[in-house]
Each structure stands twice: as structure tokens, then as C-alpha cells.
Length: 297
Image 1: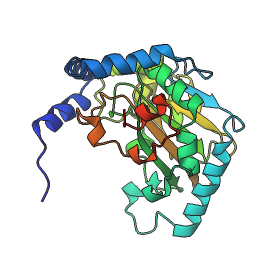
Image 2: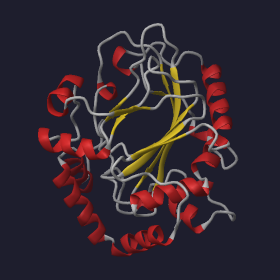
Image 3: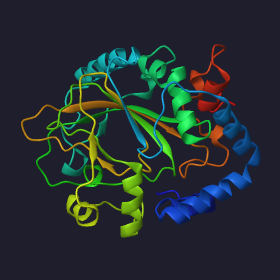
Image 4: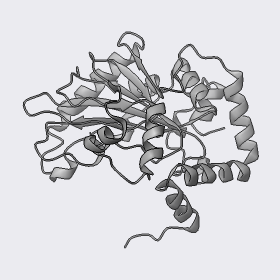
């Protein structure tokens, strides 16, 4: 039997799937309801510096494969996981045969390459500065996308993610990716805002290539291609994007996705400490910023 949503969950859902104004009002209300959290986490963001910067107008930052040493270990672990489970797409229906999560959460230990990458101090600083608030680590997984011969659907079409008004997902290539391997393809935050405004976008919707062309012509798009270890910070809430359009005969795409959200995410309860999925990663060596990110402070 399906569990009935609470009033809090219904309000969050109503805001999440609406337009930008409705979503912004919800976040403003969340901040007013928890002023201490809003002030302390924003103060942390203002106080730190960052070597890496995600430009606000772009909403994304592409980083070469040599920048993060942990990326190679992460990719190796992801490929070993894939080899151990066989074909993740076998037996799935057509609409679920791409962007298939393959990681078991038990594999995300403090010593694992997934956690070592996700909790790098320079990454946490960059994400915090961009979001303007100390974030929460929301999700760590590896996704498999093989060639799909059916028509485009779901995240293969242009969309903005509804989880938050701002978030960062870091995509780490675990296989070499070129244009035929279905790369993540991203429109800048500035052009995405213009598109949302012109079409009255609501966050439950998908937008076809033809609709984008009718409204914006031919916007400049970033394809996240490159060798293993290439990484890209993307605000998937502010930037229209698509991926997993793997062409027939091309190699499958394997990529890790690490997600950071604000405490005001539509997906989180007001007391996010009840939810924090990676709180167990905190230990005596955790910095104050890391403890905030893991939801234990």
C-alpha cells in the first residue's frame, strides 16, 4: 500500500514541480523557518576561499582528468563493480534501460575512492562558494547507459532537475566518452533561464531539441567528453541538460554522479539530520565544513 504524503511533503512537491517563482518562494519560507541554519551555513560560505570556481552565468565547470587523483581510483572501482554484476540493462523495460544505478551503498566507506573524491576539501569549498551555503552530500552513485534504439525519453530530453533551486552534481567519467557515447550535454545557466522564462517552464516537464531551436535558435552547448577521470561540476537545477543518447554500435557510458544540495532542497525534511545518508562517514579527522556537508553539524 502506497504511503500517503504528509502535509509537509505535499507542499514541497507542489513547489518542486512548479515554476521558478513558486520554487523560490518555498525556499525563502524554509530559510525563514530555520534562521539559525540559514545564517550559519551562509556565514560558512562567505568565510571560505576556493581554488576552483563554478562561474554563476555558466552554472558548470569542466575539469580535466589530471586535476583529481582520486578520479582514477573511482573509475577503476566503478568498472570493477560493473564487471562483477554483468549487464545491468538485462531484463529491464525500454524506458529504464539507461542511466542505471549500479553502486551498492555499502561500498561507500570512508576509505573508498567515492568518499575520498566527494569529500575533497577543494571540491567542498568550490561547491560551497557556488551555492552560497554549506551544502549537504545527497547522493553518490555510478550510472550505466548502453546504446538504446528506442525513441528519446525522460532524461535523454532537455530538462532542469527539480530537487533544489541550486545544486551541484559532479559527473566523473569512468569510461572514455565521445559524442557517440551519449555524453552529458549542458546549456548555460543564463540561456537556460531565458528558455524557462519564454516557455513558462515547470520542473516536471521535458523539452525537445526542436522546441529549444524554435525558442533559442542554436544555443551553445557543452558536451562532457574526454578520457577517464574527466569531471564536470553542473548545476542541474539551473542548467537545461540531457544525456545517455548512446548511439547504436557505440560503447556504453559509465559515469559517477555525486550530488550536493542545499538544506532547503524540496527533497529534504526540515530536520535534515534525520535524513543525512552519509553521516556515518564523519570521523575525528573531519573538518568543520565536512561535518556540515555530512549533516552531522
